[in-house]
Amino acid sequence: MTIFLDQPGRFLFFTGKGGVGKTSLACATAIRLADAGNRILLVSTDPASNLDEMLGAALSNQPTKVPGVDRLWALNIDPERAADAYRERVISPYRDIWAEGQLAELREQLAGACTVEIAAFDEFAELLAGDQANAPFDHVLFDTAPTGHTLRLLSLPRAWNSFLQSTTQGASCLGPHTGLKMQEARFAAAMGALADGARTTVVLVTRPDRAALREAERTSGELMAIGIKNQQLAINAVFEAADQADPVAAALAERGRAALRAMPLRLQGLPAVRIPLRAFNMVGLPALRALLDDRAAEALSHAVSSITRPSLPRLSSLIDEIAMPGRGLVMVMGKGGVGKTTIAASIAAELASRGHHVHLSTTDPAAHIASTLDGQLENLTISRIDPATEAKAYVDRVMATRGASLDDAGRALLAEDLRSPCYEEVAVFTAFSRIVSKARSSFVVLDTAPTGHTLLLLDTTGSYHRQIIGTGPEPKEASMRLVTPLMRLRDPDYTRVLLVTLAETTPVSEAARLQADLRRAQIEPFGWVINGSLAATGSADPCLKQRVAAELEQIEAVRARHAKRMAIVPWVTEEPVGPARLLALARDNELQRRDP
Image (tube, rainbow, N blue to C red; front, side):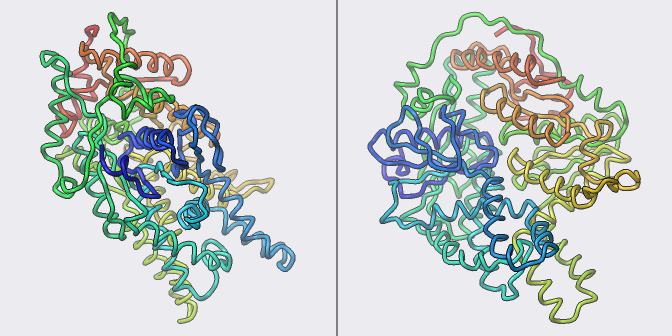
């Protein structure tokens, strides 16, 4: 294997595009290091963490011993719990000296999603900045959120340290930050740990897939730019066909080989390890131990004879229902790596081909809508909500409006406040609201960021709704003149939410949790899309047949327990890139019906 397994530093970060196997590899590495006699702490920084399910342990925000693995502890950084504790730390010094009106204003300042972000980061920084000599763990491994969210997390030490050093007025969107000033040393220590190659290694996890490799290259460059240079590459799920006469298996193997032959130059220079595609799902300690152990993997593999497959509903049937009103918002959500961008682009292309005006956009910082569409279609426009661009536009707009009536000192204070990293969240929400409103007269198809980041965006949407509507006996929405973005998302005649998943244990569980979160926000999903299904291809490859058998169990679980409507999209032999292939996917032109 490579150096991050044989000679690990104190801190290991696993990052990459959603769905590439970051959590599996982080867990497998943690177990391997613990089995070798090291004391290991495994930390998830993903708001949509599924460490509990994979390890078979009930985790919290405190280190919890993992049953079945001596010397391994794990924890989830719980953003909401961290935010509650953070708010209490900020508010408590003022309880006895401020009037209730001032405290209420401070609580309102601390109600937004940016407070959740900085609170979670505060816990993350504490783990990085601890005293190594007295540390209870030999190695700390971070299973991170999908790339866009992780890049934001890893850039926060620099952003907040710079903001605190340059801020002199003592107030920001986080309220009075005298408490934050006391954390400046911690932020600086976190920066030092991240930039120290002797202590920190970032493992860029990818698959033999062009999009995942492009994302790994982009991540590598952005990490280099913020001083994180000790990087290594893990190529997960490398597949070799057992029978070259099987067209599906041969095409899957060749697609992987072609992607690796075209690997970006930046990645070619990194130390790398290749991990085979395993026939079993990565849930439970035996499977996780087998990920990095060929002999254990062979013991878990078994032959599958005949498979009885149920009737598989098509994507085109969902699109027919979506198209009926002639306008509306389609939000495509799910775990990273399940193919949300492909499904969103396919639906948008099909709606446009039917003569509807369609706007396709994304809130995912790591999305590749333009490269997926790879061409133009009549009636279809595309855009991207870029956090940096939106933040600059928001700051410029605020300075031109609110700042116009202020004196020089007031403008300086406003400009200082707007330098806070929190305002990026506000700017993204503003752009999101603008996109949502377009669906009043046309179709808007919105490809969202992976689950955790999307939930933070929806939290911002809810905070804005509560602030505008109020909580009095006669809420403002009763006037029927005010419509907030959350009200549009709750309206089933305006918004159709599609949950995209793979027919695998973890993506289905995460989609089910997302559905529960949406329902708590009074947003009812319209349907589920099971993407990239091998069960719909007819492959007879031994490895793929074992995966098909596991897929069918998950498909039935979705049908029986979760989805009001569902559709199956097959894995296709050619990557679904470009208008023709996206339309073929939407119209089920390649859906094969023979039994595997």
